[in-house]
Length: 284
Length: 174
Image 1 (tube, each protein chain N blue to C red):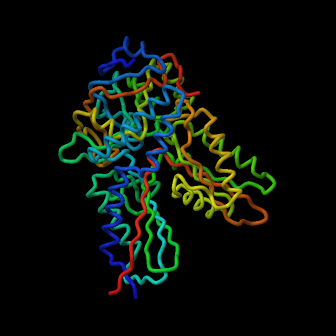
Image 2 (cartoon, helix red, strand yellow):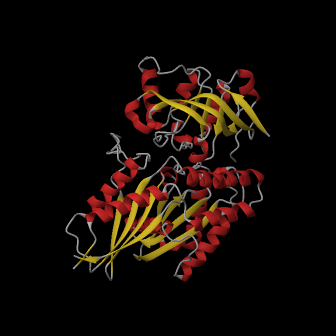
Protein backbone atom coordinates (compact mmCIF):
# COMPACT_ATOMS: atom_id res chain seq x y z
CA UNK A 1 0.00 0.00 0.00
CA UNK A 2 1.32 3.42 -0.88
CA UNK A 3 0.22 6.55 0.93
CA UNK A 4 0.70 10.31 0.96
CA UNK A 5 0.07 11.73 4.38
CA UNK A 6 -2.57 14.36 5.01
CA UNK A 7 -0.12 16.99 6.31
CA UNK A 8 1.92 16.75 3.11
CA UNK A 9 -1.20 17.46 1.04
CA UNK A 10 -2.19 20.41 3.24
CA UNK A 11 1.28 21.98 3.22
CA UNK A 12 1.71 21.41 -0.51
CA UNK A 13 -1.58 23.13 -1.38
CA UNK A 14 -0.78 25.99 0.99
CA UNK A 15 2.64 26.70 -0.48
CA UNK A 16 1.42 26.29 -4.08
CA UNK A 17 -1.18 29.00 -3.44
CA UNK A 18 1.20 31.41 -1.74
CA UNK A 19 3.86 31.01 -4.44
CA UNK A 20 1.59 31.19 -7.45
CA UNK A 21 -0.23 34.34 -6.33
CA UNK A 22 3.13 36.16 -6.35
CA UNK A 23 5.03 34.69 -9.27
CA UNK A 24 3.95 33.73 -12.77
CA UNK A 25 5.46 30.77 -14.55
CA UNK A 26 8.51 31.78 -16.60
CA UNK A 27 6.75 30.65 -19.79
CA UNK A 28 3.90 33.14 -19.19
CA UNK A 29 6.37 35.92 -18.37
CA UNK A 30 8.21 35.15 -21.61
CA UNK A 31 4.97 35.42 -23.60
CA UNK A 32 4.27 38.83 -22.07
CA UNK A 33 7.84 39.99 -22.86
CA UNK A 34 7.43 38.74 -26.42
CA UNK A 35 4.11 40.60 -26.71
CA UNK A 36 5.75 43.77 -25.38
CA UNK A 37 8.59 43.50 -27.92
CA UNK A 38 6.17 43.05 -30.83
CA UNK A 39 3.39 45.45 -29.86
CA UNK A 40 3.07 48.40 -32.28
CA UNK A 41 0.45 50.45 -30.43
CA UNK A 42 2.19 52.87 -27.98
CA UNK A 43 -0.59 52.82 -25.35
CA UNK A 44 -0.75 49.01 -25.50
CA UNK A 45 3.03 48.86 -25.14
CA UNK A 46 2.93 51.08 -22.09
CA UNK A 47 0.21 48.89 -20.48
CA UNK A 48 2.31 45.78 -21.16
CA UNK A 49 5.37 47.42 -19.64
CA UNK A 50 3.39 48.12 -16.43
CA UNK A 51 2.22 44.49 -16.34
CA UNK A 52 5.84 43.35 -16.59
CA UNK A 53 6.99 45.87 -13.97
CA UNK A 54 4.23 44.61 -11.65
CA UNK A 55 5.68 41.09 -11.83
CA UNK A 56 9.05 42.39 -10.67
CA UNK A 57 7.51 44.28 -7.74
CA UNK A 58 5.35 41.30 -6.73
CA UNK A 59 8.35 38.96 -6.75
CA UNK A 60 10.79 41.32 -5.06
CA UNK A 61 8.45 42.62 -2.38
CA UNK A 62 6.35 39.49 -1.91
CA UNK A 63 3.04 41.18 -2.74
CA UNK A 64 0.25 39.35 -4.63
CA UNK A 65 0.36 40.13 -8.37
CA UNK A 66 -3.35 40.93 -8.30
CA UNK A 67 -5.79 41.69 -5.49
CA UNK A 68 -8.17 39.08 -6.92
CA UNK A 69 -6.47 35.99 -5.58
CA UNK A 70 -9.31 33.98 -7.04
CA UNK A 71 -11.21 30.81 -6.41
CA UNK A 72 -8.89 27.81 -6.19
CA UNK A 73 -9.41 25.35 -9.03
CA UNK A 74 -7.64 21.99 -8.83
CA UNK A 75 -7.31 19.14 -11.27
CA UNK A 76 -6.09 16.20 -9.23
CA UNK A 77 -4.69 13.04 -10.83
CA UNK A 78 -4.69 10.14 -8.39
CA UNK A 79 -2.37 7.19 -8.96
CA UNK A 80 -4.36 3.96 -8.74
CA UNK A 81 -1.84 2.39 -6.34
CA UNK A 82 -2.43 5.05 -3.70
CA UNK A 83 -4.59 4.48 -0.65
CA UNK A 84 -6.22 7.32 1.28
CA UNK A 85 -7.44 6.83 4.85
CA UNK A 86 -8.59 10.46 5.06
CA UNK A 87 -10.86 12.72 3.03
CA UNK A 88 -8.67 14.20 0.27
CA UNK A 89 -11.15 17.02 -0.47
CA UNK A 90 -11.08 18.10 3.19
CA UNK A 91 -7.28 18.07 3.19
CA UNK A 92 -7.13 20.21 0.03
CA UNK A 93 -9.58 22.70 1.53
CA UNK A 94 -7.55 22.85 4.74
CA UNK A 95 -4.52 23.74 2.61
CA UNK A 96 -6.57 26.44 0.86
CA UNK A 97 -7.69 27.88 4.19
CA UNK A 98 -4.13 28.00 5.55
CA UNK A 99 -2.75 29.44 2.31
CA UNK A 100 -5.24 32.31 2.18
CA UNK A 101 -5.08 33.17 5.88
CA UNK A 102 -1.31 32.80 6.44
CA UNK A 103 -0.48 34.22 3.00
CA UNK A 104 -2.44 37.48 3.46
CA UNK A 105 -4.54 36.70 0.40
CA UNK A 106 -8.02 37.98 -0.34
CA UNK A 107 -10.94 35.82 0.68
CA UNK A 108 -13.29 36.02 -2.27
CA UNK A 109 -15.75 33.17 -1.71
CA UNK A 110 -19.30 33.62 -0.42
CA UNK A 111 -21.27 30.74 1.08
CA UNK A 112 -24.41 31.16 -1.01
CA UNK A 113 -24.70 33.08 -4.30
CA UNK A 114 -27.72 34.98 -2.97
CA UNK A 115 -26.99 35.49 0.72
CA UNK A 116 -23.35 36.39 -0.10
CA UNK A 117 -21.83 35.78 3.33
CA UNK A 118 -18.06 35.34 3.05
CA UNK A 119 -16.61 31.96 4.10
CA UNK A 120 -13.59 33.92 5.45
CA UNK A 121 -10.93 31.44 4.32
CA UNK A 122 -11.56 31.23 0.56
CA UNK A 123 -12.89 27.68 0.80
CA UNK A 124 -14.26 25.64 -0.81
CA UNK A 125 -12.01 25.00 -3.79
CA UNK A 126 -13.43 23.64 -7.05
CA UNK A 127 -11.78 20.22 -7.41
CA UNK A 128 -11.81 17.75 -10.31
CA UNK A 129 -10.46 14.22 -9.80
CA UNK A 130 -9.12 11.73 -12.29
CA UNK A 131 -7.30 8.40 -11.99
CA UNK A 132 -3.93 7.57 -13.52
CA UNK A 133 -1.67 4.50 -13.40
CA UNK A 134 1.06 4.38 -10.73
CA UNK A 135 1.52 5.89 -7.29
CA UNK A 136 1.81 9.63 -7.89
CA UNK A 137 -0.59 12.35 -6.85
CA UNK A 138 -0.39 15.12 -9.46
CA UNK A 139 -1.84 18.45 -8.37
CA UNK A 140 -2.63 21.14 -10.94
CA UNK A 141 -3.75 24.28 -9.14
CA UNK A 142 -4.84 27.75 -10.28
CA UNK A 143 -6.32 30.66 -8.32
CA UNK A 144 -8.88 31.76 -10.93
CA UNK A 145 -9.91 35.41 -11.01
CA UNK A 146 -13.54 36.49 -11.17
CA UNK A 147 -13.22 39.17 -13.86
CA UNK A 148 -12.18 36.84 -16.66
CA UNK A 149 -14.44 34.04 -15.41
CA UNK A 150 -17.45 36.40 -15.71
CA UNK A 151 -16.73 37.01 -19.40
CA UNK A 152 -16.71 33.28 -20.25
CA UNK A 153 -19.53 31.75 -22.32
CA UNK A 154 -21.15 28.48 -23.34
CA UNK A 155 -23.40 27.73 -26.30
CA UNK A 156 -25.04 24.61 -27.67
CA UNK A 157 -24.72 24.77 -31.48
CA UNK A 158 -26.24 22.46 -34.09
CA UNK A 159 -23.81 20.17 -35.95
CA UNK A 160 -24.58 22.02 -39.23
CA UNK A 161 -23.36 25.31 -37.71
CA UNK A 162 -19.81 23.97 -38.04
CA UNK A 163 -16.42 25.54 -37.58
CA UNK A 164 -17.30 29.02 -38.85
CA UNK A 165 -19.98 29.44 -36.16
CA UNK A 166 -17.49 28.42 -33.48
CA UNK A 167 -14.98 30.99 -34.72
CA UNK A 168 -17.62 33.73 -34.82
CA UNK A 169 -18.81 32.83 -31.29
CA UNK A 170 -15.26 33.08 -29.95
CA UNK A 171 -14.56 36.40 -31.70
CA UNK A 172 -17.89 37.91 -30.59
CA UNK A 173 -17.33 36.80 -27.00
CA UNK A 174 -13.84 38.35 -26.85
CA UNK A 175 -14.84 41.55 -28.67
CA UNK A 176 -17.83 42.07 -26.37
CA UNK A 177 -15.76 41.31 -23.27
CA UNK A 178 -13.39 44.15 -24.22
CA UNK A 179 -11.16 45.22 -21.33
CA UNK A 180 -13.17 43.45 -18.63
CA UNK A 181 -11.37 40.07 -18.55
CA UNK A 182 -8.00 41.91 -18.25
CA UNK A 183 -6.46 41.17 -21.66
CA UNK A 184 -4.03 39.99 -22.90
CA UNK A 185 -5.94 36.80 -22.17
CA UNK A 186 -5.45 33.08 -22.56
CA UNK A 187 -8.48 31.58 -24.27
CA UNK A 188 -9.55 28.07 -23.26
CA UNK A 189 -12.06 26.48 -25.62
CA UNK A 190 -13.98 23.24 -25.19
CA UNK A 191 -15.71 21.62 -28.15
CA UNK A 192 -17.91 18.52 -27.87
CA UNK A 193 -18.88 16.39 -24.92
CA UNK A 194 -22.19 17.64 -23.54
CA UNK A 195 -23.42 20.64 -21.55
CA UNK A 196 -21.33 20.19 -18.39
CA UNK A 197 -18.41 18.38 -20.00
CA UNK A 198 -17.71 21.14 -22.50
CA UNK A 199 -17.21 23.67 -19.69
CA UNK A 200 -14.82 21.22 -18.03
CA UNK A 201 -12.90 20.91 -21.32
CA UNK A 202 -12.57 24.68 -21.62
CA UNK A 203 -11.31 24.99 -18.05
CA UNK A 204 -8.85 22.16 -18.59
CA UNK A 205 -7.63 23.94 -21.74
CA UNK A 206 -6.46 27.01 -19.77
CA UNK A 207 -4.49 24.68 -17.49
CA UNK A 208 -2.38 23.51 -20.45
CA UNK A 209 1.21 24.71 -20.75
CA UNK A 210 1.18 28.03 -22.60
CA UNK A 211 3.73 26.78 -25.17
CA UNK A 212 2.12 23.43 -26.03
CA UNK A 213 -0.19 22.68 -28.95
CA UNK A 214 -3.25 20.42 -29.19
CA UNK A 215 -2.67 16.72 -29.93
CA UNK A 216 -5.66 16.55 -32.26
CA UNK A 217 -5.01 18.10 -35.68
CA UNK A 218 -8.43 19.81 -35.99
CA UNK A 219 -7.96 21.43 -32.57
CA UNK A 220 -4.41 22.51 -33.36
CA UNK A 221 -5.45 24.20 -36.61
CA UNK A 222 -8.29 25.96 -34.82
CA UNK A 223 -5.86 27.24 -32.16
CA UNK A 224 -3.61 28.79 -34.83
CA UNK A 225 -6.50 30.32 -36.80
CA UNK A 226 -8.23 31.71 -33.72
CA UNK A 227 -5.11 33.27 -32.20
CA UNK A 228 -4.45 35.16 -35.41
CA UNK A 229 -8.07 36.35 -35.74
CA UNK A 230 -8.40 37.31 -32.06
CA UNK A 231 -5.27 39.44 -32.23
CA UNK A 232 -6.73 41.32 -35.21
CA UNK A 233 -9.78 42.38 -33.15
CA UNK A 234 -7.85 45.41 -31.82
CA UNK A 235 -9.18 44.84 -28.29
CA UNK A 236 -5.64 45.06 -26.94
CA UNK A 237 -4.27 45.15 -23.39
CA UNK A 238 -7.06 46.26 -20.99
CA UNK A 239 -9.34 46.87 -24.01
CA UNK A 240 -7.49 50.02 -25.07
CA UNK A 241 -6.59 48.74 -28.55
CA UNK A 242 -3.45 47.07 -29.85
CA UNK A 243 -2.04 43.90 -31.37
CA UNK A 244 -2.00 41.89 -28.16
CA UNK A 245 -5.46 40.64 -27.20
CA UNK A 246 -4.62 36.98 -26.55
CA UNK A 247 -1.34 35.36 -25.52
CA UNK A 248 -2.53 31.87 -26.45
CA UNK A 249 -5.57 29.86 -27.54
CA UNK A 250 -6.05 26.30 -26.30
CA UNK A 251 -8.70 23.99 -27.75
CA UNK A 252 -9.72 20.72 -26.11
CA UNK A 253 -12.26 18.48 -27.81
CA UNK A 254 -14.26 15.37 -26.91
CA UNK A 255 -16.72 13.04 -28.66
CA UNK A 256 -20.33 14.25 -28.65
CA UNK A 257 -23.94 13.34 -29.53
CA UNK A 258 -25.06 13.25 -33.19
CA UNK A 259 -27.47 16.12 -32.44
CA UNK A 260 -24.98 18.38 -30.65
CA UNK A 261 -22.07 20.75 -31.07
CA UNK A 262 -21.40 22.16 -27.59
CA UNK A 263 -18.86 25.01 -27.35
CA UNK A 264 -17.49 26.64 -24.18
CA UNK A 265 -15.08 29.54 -23.88
CA UNK A 266 -13.24 30.08 -20.62
CA UNK A 267 -11.12 33.21 -20.39
CA UNK A 268 -7.97 33.59 -18.31
CA UNK A 269 -6.60 37.05 -17.50
CA UNK A 270 -2.94 37.99 -18.05
CA UNK A 271 -2.23 37.17 -14.41
CA UNK A 272 -2.27 33.51 -15.43
CA UNK A 273 -1.28 31.99 -12.13
CA UNK A 274 -1.01 28.22 -11.98
CA UNK A 275 1.23 25.54 -10.60
CA UNK A 276 1.84 21.80 -10.80
CA UNK A 277 3.30 19.59 -8.11
CA UNK A 278 3.83 15.83 -8.11
CA UNK A 279 3.73 13.99 -4.78
CA UNK A 280 5.06 10.45 -4.57
CA UNK A 281 3.38 7.66 -2.58
CA UNK A 282 5.42 6.12 0.21
CA UNK A 283 5.23 2.79 2.03
CA UNK A 284 3.96 3.01 5.59
CA UNK B 1 2.74 63.39 -20.72
CA UNK B 2 1.40 62.67 -17.24
CA UNK B 3 -0.63 65.23 -15.36
CA UNK B 4 -0.47 65.47 -11.58
CA UNK B 5 -3.89 65.98 -10.04
CA UNK B 6 -4.87 66.52 -6.41
CA UNK B 7 -8.08 65.32 -4.74
CA UNK B 8 -10.78 66.38 -4.29
CA UNK B 9 -10.78 67.41 -7.94
CA UNK B 10 -12.15 70.89 -8.43
CA UNK B 11 -14.51 71.60 -11.32
CA UNK B 12 -11.84 73.28 -13.43
CA UNK B 13 -9.45 70.33 -13.22
CA UNK B 14 -12.16 67.72 -13.75
CA UNK B 15 -13.64 69.47 -16.78
CA UNK B 16 -10.21 69.89 -18.32
CA UNK B 17 -9.51 66.15 -18.32
CA UNK B 18 -9.81 64.56 -21.74
CA UNK B 19 -10.06 60.97 -22.91
CA UNK B 20 -6.64 59.35 -23.09
CA UNK B 21 -4.96 61.71 -20.62
CA UNK B 22 -2.53 60.00 -18.24
CA UNK B 23 -2.97 61.26 -14.69
CA UNK B 24 -1.14 60.75 -11.39
CA UNK B 25 -3.57 61.17 -8.50
CA UNK B 26 -2.53 62.36 -5.04
CA UNK B 27 -4.74 62.83 -1.99
CA UNK B 28 -7.77 61.07 -0.53
CA UNK B 29 -9.81 58.49 -2.41
CA UNK B 30 -12.52 56.14 -1.12
CA UNK B 31 -12.91 52.47 -1.99
CA UNK B 32 -16.16 50.66 -2.68
CA UNK B 33 -17.12 47.70 -4.83
CA UNK B 34 -20.24 45.57 -5.35
CA UNK B 35 -21.41 44.93 -1.77
CA UNK B 36 -20.56 48.43 -0.49
CA UNK B 37 -22.39 50.01 -3.43
CA UNK B 38 -25.47 48.02 -2.60
CA UNK B 39 -25.31 49.24 1.00
CA UNK B 40 -24.63 52.87 0.05
CA UNK B 41 -27.59 52.97 -2.32
CA UNK B 42 -29.81 51.18 0.23
CA UNK B 43 -28.82 53.85 2.79
CA UNK B 44 -29.70 56.61 0.31
CA UNK B 45 -33.06 55.00 -0.42
CA UNK B 46 -33.93 54.92 3.29
CA UNK B 47 -32.72 58.52 3.77
CA UNK B 48 -29.91 57.44 6.08
CA UNK B 49 -26.69 59.39 6.32
CA UNK B 50 -23.81 58.03 4.25
CA UNK B 51 -20.51 57.06 5.92
CA UNK B 52 -18.74 59.82 3.97
CA UNK B 53 -19.71 62.92 2.04
CA UNK B 54 -19.76 62.08 -1.67
CA UNK B 55 -19.46 65.67 -2.84
CA UNK B 56 -16.67 65.96 -5.41
CA UNK B 57 -15.11 62.74 -4.12
CA UNK B 58 -13.47 59.84 -5.93
CA UNK B 59 -14.58 56.22 -5.51
CA UNK B 60 -12.10 53.52 -6.49
CA UNK B 61 -13.53 50.07 -7.28
CA UNK B 62 -11.16 47.80 -5.39
CA UNK B 63 -11.13 44.98 -2.86
CA UNK B 64 -7.50 44.76 -1.69
CA UNK B 65 -5.66 41.78 -0.27
CA UNK B 66 -5.01 42.11 3.50
CA UNK B 67 -2.06 44.31 4.46
CA UNK B 68 0.89 42.60 6.11
CA UNK B 69 2.05 44.17 9.40
CA UNK B 70 4.54 46.50 7.67
CA UNK B 71 2.28 47.54 4.79
CA UNK B 72 -0.35 50.28 4.30
CA UNK B 73 -2.36 47.97 2.05
CA UNK B 74 -1.98 44.72 0.14
CA UNK B 75 -2.34 44.23 -3.61
CA UNK B 76 -4.94 46.76 -4.78
CA UNK B 77 -5.74 46.85 -8.50
CA UNK B 78 -9.12 47.86 -9.95
CA UNK B 79 -12.13 45.59 -10.41
CA UNK B 80 -14.53 45.72 -13.38
CA UNK B 81 -16.67 48.86 -13.32
CA UNK B 82 -19.71 47.62 -15.27
CA UNK B 83 -21.02 45.86 -12.16
CA UNK B 84 -21.37 49.25 -10.47
CA UNK B 85 -23.35 50.78 -13.38
CA UNK B 86 -26.61 49.94 -11.62
CA UNK B 87 -25.61 51.96 -8.52
CA UNK B 88 -23.41 54.82 -9.74
CA UNK B 89 -26.15 57.17 -11.01
CA UNK B 90 -27.70 57.33 -7.49
CA UNK B 91 -24.30 58.20 -6.01
CA UNK B 92 -23.59 60.77 -8.71
CA UNK B 93 -26.87 62.50 -7.90
CA UNK B 94 -25.48 62.96 -4.39
CA UNK B 95 -22.31 64.64 -5.62
CA UNK B 96 -19.94 61.83 -6.60
CA UNK B 97 -17.97 63.05 -9.62
CA UNK B 98 -15.10 60.69 -10.23
CA UNK B 99 -14.80 56.90 -10.39
CA UNK B 100 -11.77 54.68 -10.91
CA UNK B 101 -12.13 51.10 -12.15
CA UNK B 102 -11.36 49.01 -15.18
CA UNK B 103 -13.12 48.19 -18.43
CA UNK B 104 -16.13 49.48 -20.36
CA UNK B 105 -19.24 51.05 -18.85
CA UNK B 106 -22.80 50.99 -20.18
CA UNK B 107 -24.13 53.61 -22.61
CA UNK B 108 -26.51 54.77 -19.86
CA UNK B 109 -23.53 55.33 -17.59
CA UNK B 110 -21.67 57.31 -20.26
CA UNK B 111 -24.71 59.58 -20.58
CA UNK B 112 -24.92 59.93 -16.78
CA UNK B 113 -21.25 60.94 -16.57
CA UNK B 114 -21.84 63.54 -19.29
CA UNK B 115 -24.97 64.84 -17.54
CA UNK B 116 -23.25 65.15 -14.17
CA UNK B 117 -20.02 66.40 -15.74
CA UNK B 118 -18.16 63.61 -14.01
CA UNK B 119 -15.17 61.60 -15.14
CA UNK B 120 -14.37 57.88 -15.29
CA UNK B 121 -10.74 56.89 -14.90
CA UNK B 122 -9.25 53.47 -15.43
CA UNK B 123 -6.29 51.90 -13.72
CA UNK B 124 -4.56 48.89 -15.29
CA UNK B 125 -6.10 45.62 -14.12
CA UNK B 126 -3.86 42.94 -12.64
CA UNK B 127 -1.08 45.26 -11.45
CA UNK B 128 -2.14 45.39 -7.81
CA UNK B 129 1.41 45.01 -6.47
CA UNK B 130 2.62 48.06 -8.40
CA UNK B 131 -0.43 50.15 -7.43
CA UNK B 132 -0.02 49.26 -3.76
CA UNK B 133 3.26 51.22 -3.76
CA UNK B 134 1.28 54.46 -4.30
CA UNK B 135 -0.93 53.99 -1.23
CA UNK B 136 0.41 55.77 1.87
CA UNK B 137 -2.38 54.82 4.28
CA UNK B 138 -5.64 52.92 4.42
CA UNK B 139 -8.38 53.07 7.02
CA UNK B 140 -11.71 51.22 7.08
CA UNK B 141 -14.43 53.84 7.56
CA UNK B 142 -17.59 51.81 6.92
CA UNK B 143 -19.02 48.31 6.64
CA UNK B 144 -16.07 46.44 8.22
CA UNK B 145 -18.20 43.28 8.11
CA UNK B 146 -17.65 43.24 4.33
CA UNK B 147 -13.95 42.37 4.74
CA UNK B 148 -12.18 43.09 1.43
CA UNK B 149 -15.34 44.91 0.30
CA UNK B 150 -15.41 47.35 3.23
CA UNK B 151 -15.25 51.09 2.46
CA UNK B 152 -11.71 52.38 2.96
CA UNK B 153 -10.30 55.86 2.98
CA UNK B 154 -6.98 55.80 1.14
CA UNK B 155 -4.26 58.41 0.97
CA UNK B 156 -2.49 57.97 -2.34
CA UNK B 157 0.53 59.56 -3.94
CA UNK B 158 0.96 59.53 -7.72
CA UNK B 159 -1.62 56.80 -8.32
CA UNK B 160 -1.51 56.21 -12.12
CA UNK B 161 -4.76 56.25 -14.12
CA UNK B 162 -6.04 57.01 -17.62
CA UNK B 163 -9.08 59.13 -18.46
CA UNK B 164 -11.54 56.66 -20.04
CA UNK B 165 -14.78 58.70 -20.13
CA UNK B 166 -14.53 62.48 -19.87
CA UNK B 167 -17.08 65.06 -18.79
CA UNK B 168 -18.15 65.54 -22.41
CA UNK B 169 -19.09 61.87 -22.67
CA UNK B 170 -16.19 60.80 -24.88
CA UNK B 171 -15.07 57.20 -24.27
CA UNK B 172 -11.68 55.59 -24.82
CA UNK B 173 -13.30 52.27 -25.69
CA UNK B 174 -14.33 51.65 -29.30
